[in-house]
Image (tube, rainbow, N blue to C red; front, side, top):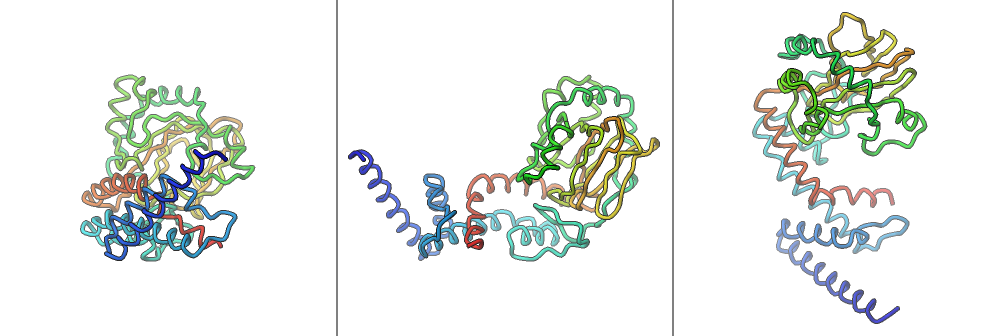
Length: 337
């Protein structure tokens, strides 16, 4: 190894020693914000220092990993607990999110993998009359179904790739070519396809009763399920919204199961509304494609103030998650040792 390598290594070690001393001093003075900032600076400059895969960490390293994760969660909780002033159930939501309380699920088949708001009506399927403004909006959409159907017929995007941490299982891998989509709205942003729609259709879609809390929602897309396709059971990310399916091309041999209930399409049905925080799956046992328009609406139990609070919450959560939130789960690897 050349002299330059040793100079770089020595310089880095000197910086590391200086940073750990600063962190220790900040913790001693209970200046937790400074300690958190130093940990994220350290992590972003040398993430491998916080990785213990394949090795038994030293006591010092394990302590730093635990400290960094705990401080990140503390920062997130402090930033997001403002929602407790909006309603007690939103306050409980934040406690559950940061592990300060255990979720009390109303149904064992309901387990959202992001946030859970207690005391909301808990059932797999909803009637269109329970969702304010939805029936009248769907009636305005009817003349434009053929235009949306044409989008479905040329959809090529693999919707499975929208999932995070997808299990490497044969049934999910097979689905990559059997569940296709075209996004119109994603994370609250209009796609190029949306902008290419006819002006009357764009105007109708602009007035859809969507759940606005970017980047979590809204999402609107045309979904195509090929003949024989099967979507394995999985949970959605929250119970603050419901998922609406508008039929564009359906068959009674296409179905969706949520919780322990099964929905099958009939021609007279104008929509299917379900809570995707329940374990759910879908299949198309027809020899024709199933094409539907899918989008998110707010859970009907939420008040206007709660909806506004959740929109603000999602924005702040995204900032935290992309910053010090990167440290929040580092200590999970310690529990695996």
